[in-house]
Amino acid sequence: MKTKNRDQSLSDSRELDGSYDQLTGNPSNSQSKKSIKQRFLKLLACCSAPAPPSVSESNLHPSPTDSIEDDFELSTVCHRPESMDKLQEQTKFTKKELQVLYRGFKNECPSGVVNEENFKTIYSQFFPQGDSSMYAHFLFEAFDTDKNGSVSFEDFVFGLSIILRGTINDRLNWAFNLYDLNKDGCITKEEMLDIMKSIYDMMGKCTYPNMQDEAPREHVENFFQKMDRNKDGVVTIEEFIESCQKDENIMQSMQLFDNVI
Image (cartoon, rainbow, N blue to C red; front, side, top):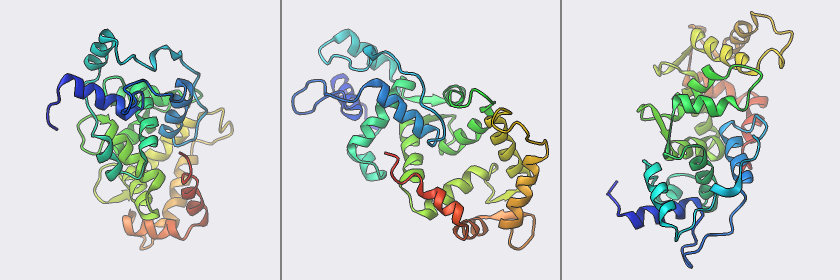
């Protein structure tokens, strides 16, 4: 990405998060910080957790004429996302949707990127009753597609675009990649057991008070009985997609995300 001058970098950032009106140069009448943060965090948790408490409104709209705040914003954001037009071309989000997502992302990750530990901290807000650290690790690995140890806004929206707006095959491929922990092209029972244990740990005993210790392993056995068509002990991407497409419940769950934003 070419180096931008100071004014252009700040303008691009404000254009992306919607806090700047490109025609008038004035702050826009955007949604409240509470609404933006709630929508962003719901998306990060795939809409499976309650929204977090609201945060003060005071940090949401930096004044475009305040040089002190300009300097602070430029010093804290170390990663500049792609331009709005390019992100629209590469994802299935509209400009307005990208602005909502970016404002929430920048609020949680002022530097423009999030590392794994911070990702785990954010994700743990949704599951205080359990330990979400291992599942958050797997999820972080799925979003960190270039394997550089951090998730940028581009990484986040590319993954989210697949989950929310991709075709059925796109979504199933993304899910398979999440479960294929060592990325060798197949899911083993050990990998699936690690995933299932992390999910049960995340949900906690208060969600499943009578859960037996063997429940994750039994879930894995059921998974392989359904998915492992040739009974060779692993599930390939072809077996995974074919089995999921024939499962009515899985297909219905895929459609739940169609109108999230």
